[in-house]
Length: 566
Image (cartoon, rainbow, N blue to C red):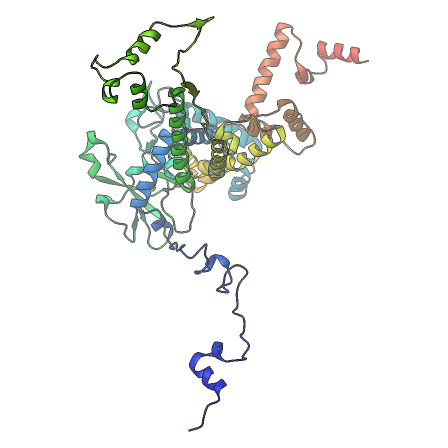
C-alpha cells in the first residue's frame, strides 16, 4: 500500500482547512447576508431575519372566519374607545361620502349611436335623459319617508355613509335589494326597489361550518370561473340575544336574477387575486401600535393625576420614633396612639400650634416644627419623549389610513400653507380613489337596479327609431359621475384664481372645478346664477363681480358700463 504524504493525509482526514500551507478560498457572501442568496430578505441566517418565517396564504385563507372575526372585533373596539381611530374614520367618511353622495347621469350616447345606428343619440338627448333620470333619482334617494330603505330609517346617502363605515372598519360592506311592491301606492313609495344594509358579521357559512371548495366565508362561488354566485346570510346577528332562534338559521341569496339585475351587492378592496371576502379594515396594519399608544396615553394621564393629587409634602430630618422620644413621649407606640397618656411635650407642641392659622394678605403661613420643610412635587408629566412618540405613531397611522398627519391629529399648529396644501392633495388622491372605487363597486349596482325599474315605470325620453333595450345596454344608460364632498380651500383667493386661470386657458372646465372643489353640479351652479341675476335686476341692485358680464349687451347697465369705460 502506497504511503500517503502528510499533505494528502491531512486532506483526507480534515478537509482543506487542515492542510498546511493550503490557501483557503473565501466563502461567498451577499451584500448583507452570509448565505449569498440573491435577496437579503430571503436569508434564513441573518441576525434580523432568522426568526422571521411568515406563511404563504391564499386570498381566502388570509381572511378566514376566525381571523376575520377577531380582527374586526378588535378594530371596532378601537374605533369605539380610541379618539384617534374614531377621528380617522370620521375624516375619511366626511371626505369621501359626507352628507350627500349623488350621481350625475352621463349616458354613453356615442356607444348607443354606434350600436343602434340611430343618429338621434347625441349630446342633446343625453342632457335631456340625464336631467329626467336625476330628477327621479332624487325623488327616490332623498325621500323624506325613507321608502328607499327597506328598514325606512335612512336616505340613500346615509345608507352609503353606513356602508362605507363598515368598509373602513370591517373590510367589506354588504346590501340586499328586496323588491317590495306593497309599498307602491298613492302617498307612499313610488318604486318597489329598496336597499337594506346588512351587517357583514352575518355573512358566514351555514351552521358555522369550515370553508369548502365552493363556499368561502359565506360566499358561494362558481368552481369553474371563481365568480360569486350566491351569499349565505344569517337571519339575525349571532350576538342578537333577542333573536336567538333566527341567529342560527341562514338564507341563500343569489347574487343576481336571470336577467342580471343585482339582488345582493358586496364590495371590498381586493388585496390578492382569488379573494372573495374582505375583513381587514384600514387599521389592520397599525392596530397594535394604536393599542400601545392608548395604553401609553392612559399611563401618562394616570401619572399626571397622581402628581396633581400629591402637590407637596413635609420633609423632616428625624425618624418618627426618635422625634417622639425627644418630645417627651414614653415610647413610639404611644406617641401617635389613641391613649392620652404619655404625650408629654408632643401634646404641648400640638396645643401650641393649634389655632395658629397665620396668613399674610390671604396667603396661608404654615407652622412647621424645627428642622421640617415643605417640598413641592416636581411634576414631569407628560414625559419629554411623550409628544415625539405620539407624533411618530400618529404619522404611522396616517400613512396606513391614507390621511395626512394633520388630519389624524387635528393639529395644524406647526404647518404652513405649502406643506398643508401638499399633504392634503396627497390625501385627496386616496380619498378620491376610495370614493370612486366605492361608487363603482357598491353604489352603482344599486342605482342600476333602481334605473331598470325607472325605465319601465317612468318612460324616460328616448329618441325615435331603433333604441336598444335597457338590459342590452345597461352600462350605457346607467353611466354616471358620482359627486361627494369637494376638496375645499385652504386659501380661497389663490386657489379660486388658479381655477379661473385653468378654465380660461382651456385646461379645466366649470364642471370639473365645481365638482372637485365644492362637490357641486355645474348645472345647478348655472341655474342658481340665473335666478340670482334675475333677482338682482328685478330689485334694481348692482350685480356683484363677474355676474355683470352675463348682462346682455343691449341692457341699460351694459350701456352705462360702456359709457363709463369710454
